[in-house]
Image 1: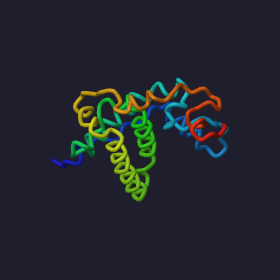
Image 2 (image 1 turned 90 degrees about the vertical axis):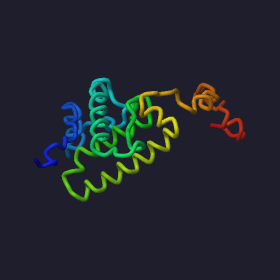
Image 3 (image 1 turned 120 degrees about the vertical axis):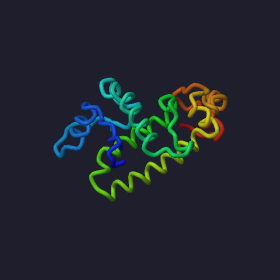
Length: 165
């Protein structure tokens, strides 16, 4: 039996996302919406199919490439905002990357850089996340020290520098 026949294909993006990408890249497009990897800027109809697709992408990446524990994308990826943004960008980049061998190699380099960012971002807490024991963000106490945004010039940074907004 040929072992290569057992390889699974990259998960097909949702039709709505493919249509959106095609419209954005059309030469005479008038569409001026956000990129599909800018998750926080997507309208509701485009964000709706993303979690299921990105989850299938994470599962595919884990199955195809994660040989070492630190290479496993944790199952709680969606609650790590920065990780979700990176996964969306990596998944969208993969759509066209395998049209050209050189682009495929570059995509793999991007994937390696993604793994380094993921491990730096998750730190030691990533080990717990990978086995299904997600904990609150370690920096939550430091982030809580930030006062609510006022939208004006009365911010700690402005006050500390004696400047104005």
